[in-house]
Amino acid sequence: MEMIRSRWQIENGLHWVKDVTLEEDDPPRRGGYAPISWAVFNSFLITFIRRLGCRTIPDGIRELSNQVQDVFRLLT
Image (cartoon, rainbow, N blue to C red; front, side, top):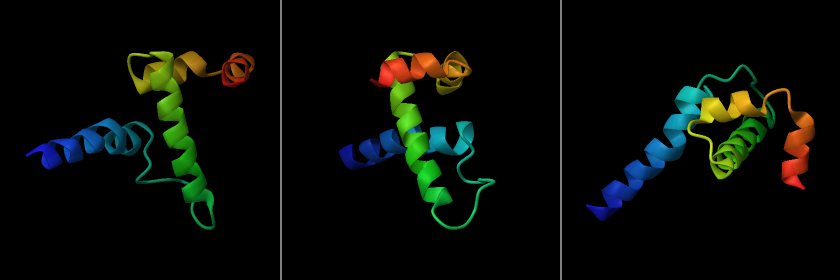
């Protein structure tokens, strides 16, 4: 049972967010390394927003949008 719970925790905590919120299953970018690059970027974005303490991923995206200077400051 513990293995099943840990599997669903990963599914609900990461894969569902990537699929539904960031629409990773139907990307507009195809070919080459673009899908892999976007998958890495999306994982980083989710982790970054969660560490900022935002309630949801869309809230975090809205909070960070158009604030490039603040994002770079947070990353350094």
